Amino acid sequence: MKPDTHSGNRGLDLEEPLLFELGRDGRTGVDLPEPPKVASRLGGLERADTIGLPGVSEPEVVRHFVRISRNNYSIDANLYPLGSCTMKHNPRLNEKMARLPGFGDVHPLQPESTVQGALELIHTLGTWLKKITGLPAIAMPPAAGAHGELCGMMAIRAAHDAKGDKNRHRVLIPESAHGTNPATAAQCGFEVDPVPGNERGRIDIAAVKAKLGPDVAGIMLTNPNTLGLFENDVIEVANAIHSVGGYFYADGANFNAIVGKARPGDMGVDAIHINLHKTFSTPHGGGGPGSGPVAFSAALAPYAPLPMVVEQAGGRFHLVEHRGNKGEPGEHSFGRLRTFNGQMGMFVRALSYMMSHGSDGLRQVAEDAVLSANYIMASLAGDMTSPFEGPCMHEALFDDRFLEGTGVTTLDFAKAMIDEGYHPMTVYFPLVVHGAMLTEPTETESKQSIDRFIGVLRHLARKAKAGDAEFFKNSPKYSPRRRVDETGAARNPVLRWQPTAPRAQAAE
Image (cartoon, rainbow, N blue to C red; front, side, top):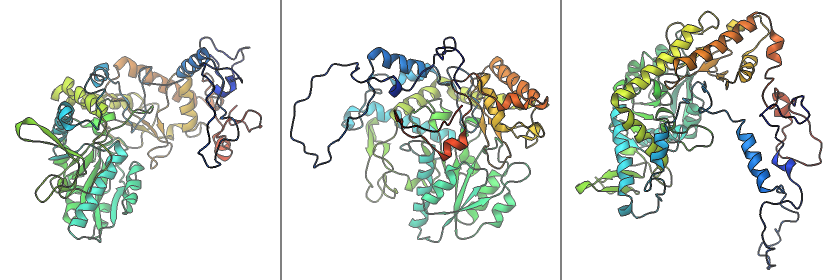
């Protein structure tokens, strides 16, 4: 439903049609000569009709994208409360460093002698990642968290294969895990064996031990877990998996909660990916590139992927791109994981973040992130309900019990947040919590910012309990479009704009 003004505009929020709807035949922002006629080499596959691009002038193009950019929600505009995805402020210093000559314009096919500074930066960042994880080896190429999971599980597969242990086909994964965990295990040829949680929201250690056997390849465990809770039995889990010859893969998506405070290597972890684009503040979401280096224990280090940076005599750095001979780097590597060595811009930003914070600053990151989440949980204890007792880590998790009998659902609650100027928190995840609302404020929000957010949630919770269900069903009112008919959109998706064909409306 559009605003009730004649223009469709609402103050400075301008109504914006699709670029194709703006287009007119014969209108263009450039003036190009007619191309010369040449003999076709397409073998009868020439285009029969016009390409169908919209005809728009240069001012129309600029205005169009400026107007729709105003509808973007970003961390630069307001608190971004998505749980399970650390969305925190990206220091502008990091951006400046990533654009320095020699980093911003480096090319992966340059001769090794001309990129010694870049290789040294990658090596230095890897060294610090090894120190904060407490693990002896690092693989820098993975492009993001899921790619890091693939890297770790491929190393586990390679380690078992190297020992001739072909019967390891089961991987234990908590029921509350990120969806990428079981997908990655399955992609690597493993059978996913889910492990339930206990009444405290942690993995059931008795269930883990009951599932152990000679066919277990390992376990994939997130710590802190996706419920925002620390896995107190993590060392016992590691010992149990190791006792049957399996390996411990840790999902590092929530590393922001323990960076500088606890080392995965001390917990018995054999492999863990670190989301540089979360923990170390580089751009997350919005199309920005990710980076998910994987740290390995001594048991898995020989199987780390290529390419890898090694330091040579005289302070020179070498990029190992092929499996080495006996005794050389990369001898037992499971192979090349990607074309080049990783995302250079992410490496520069992450190292800048680490060096500007220092060891004490990184500890404070974790401390403040955990404090912020617990402040939200404690402040809303009288208005919203949490599925588990006690303090949380970096995420405050609520369920929908406080909405029982109100006629308001978690989705309704989330839609009402849009009118208040907030992107909704993560809803209906983790799946093991009914009507879940998962919030991660991070350490970069001020108390005043968090207080405003708490005030909105408290107001909406009380409004729902007061019986104003109609208000929630009609939300959002102030967004460019009203609530989408998600069922209709899923059953009758409109995937391509057509100028004349009638189509079902998926929104009011």
